[in-house]
Length: 400
Image (cartoon, rainbow, N blue to C red; front, side, top):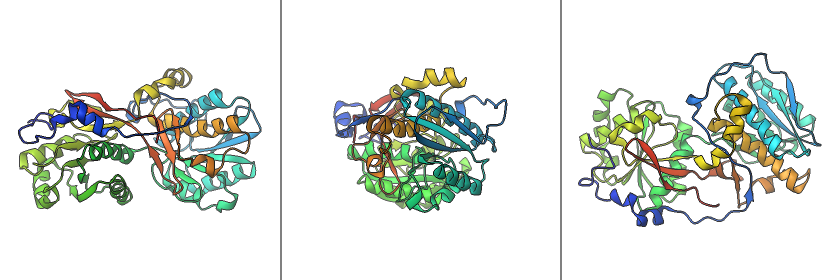
């Protein structure tokens, strides 16, 4: 079966992806200011599972200084979130070592994975004078923390991809939706703005809404959202039933686990549904094994910039005894943001005005900018799958 990168007869606009003209159109003009540190990561699935020798204490403080950053973590809770929490804390400690400079201390509060207890721990941190809260990493616990009256609550950088809201609660984590939208950004910049979403049955309504809003915000036109069954044999019939959504589409965005993205792409080609589609957009949830499927040749996948990630990966691995994950890199960035502001501007520097500066920040996981509505803009490097490997198509740029 031919891939999207090799069917020039059917998709004549695809080949310009490789040309300087496409690259020039796809690049976004950016301008930037405040710098943090940077890092290299593996996916969550590639991180070694290392169980703690002892339970994490109820509170654990690293660093010294009058200004406190609090972390809400569940290192003693259920897996896999407990493993992620341990990774996040290792990264946070590295951020304090890099940027604390004797001005900031970090205190981790053990939540046990219970949302009500997470709120209690957040209130304890606030009473202790926390200027910034990093975490939690699940939306149920975040809802409890967000319910604390904004007047007495410091800014919250939640390590989730959703759940942000006005008033200083930010969905700081980057997820597959962010990744897909960065791919859409590149496609729209190249004039391929007619978008169709292909989502597996059971896909989150919240993430579906984020995708629709994101496509609109990027000046793309969402022609339709196609829900497909998980059984490969049933995909062609399901796509045919929703064929009008593909009539004018130039960009197809595919979500799915395992081999599903390749199966969907193959069904599009074999069924003749995507004859106008010239751009296939993947996301960070695609497993690397499917890159080798030729049907995905030419697909775009936006990921955190690997050169940026490489800046702390070796130090993290030496300290933690396992590879750096993207999630841990984001925890590094959250703590480094607060510590960097305090070190540069003083104890009172962590304000909503400073955090939501239009210039944004450069962190371990790349460029990011916090928005007043609680969302976070991110820039990724856009890669193109060629022969089973990722080749850089468009860098993350220099700023917003």
